[in-house]
Image 1 (cartoon, helix red, strand yellow):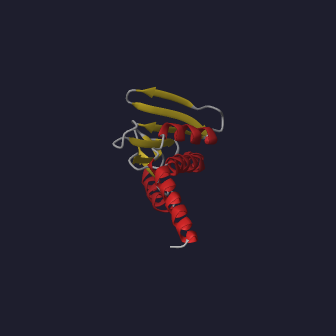
Image 2: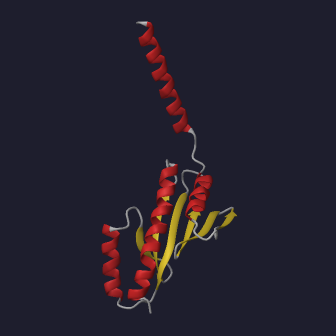
Length: 160
């Protein structure tokens, strides 16, 4: 083996080892969530509640109030992001349901519209096992932007 080939092999191994080491660093979901919220919070309104049952953040993104819940920091725990877009009951609920189902298919990416305690919400939820920082950011951003883009329109069309 020539000196050049040996050096190239050592460099490749070193790069590979570095990449494996980087991938092995656990994601601090709390830091990632707080960084994302800080970048999206339009009114400096972010609030957080840390308890034994997990962590709950609330912030304003445009006209949407967004909630982020992290149930814990183990692989069995869950990240859930949601935002209320419409109170129920609503006008023409059959048409509303059809519209929301269509939007779930076409527009919401990893989020979806759902019903939570007589409210229409945009929600994304996922286990934190193997969840990378980009996925945390994407979940929060998708819910916030989907809610902000649709809350006023849905309230105008279907609100009582």
